[in-house]
Length: 195
Image 1 (cartoon, one colour):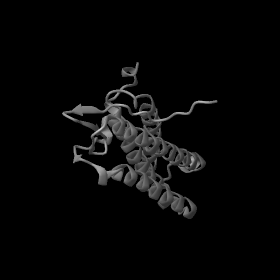
Image 2 (cartoon, rainbow, N blue to C red):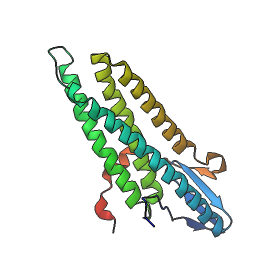
Image 3 (cartoon, rainbow, N blue to C red):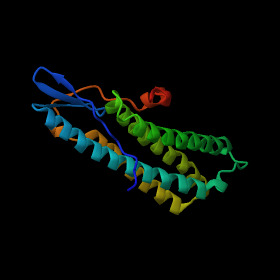
């Protein structure tokens, strides 16, 4: 048997006679029994592990597309010379950020702040992948690459689906709406805190 990376949230709080689970998407859930809270966390872990796989799939496809078009990221004598070089720098920065955020989401999910860290990491990935699509569009506009144009549109649609899933997860069952995490928060979290 082999192990796979997965999300493992496990923290909830007891307030009076209720068990509460707060998630980084801005929703708080209330349960009368501890078993219900634990069951909800198991369901949430499954959902977030699926989102992890989905984000990783989109990330790998975006990375592959970038590398397949890598040689086209070259300056020309036109006005957009600086823009294409900046787009390439941005793409490399975002690709590194997505990789680090996915690692943080896995290794820090079972910590006390895991309920927030995972969502912050995923929101960062959504933002970074969306920005990569915008930067790949620089190449589309410059080179008139129709195939790449439709790939970028497809990536953008997949990223939107991920974000919508995160935002709407179990919202109808929420007890309260709280402050949602920001995607920038993940950049402040260091892996050295995981022990």
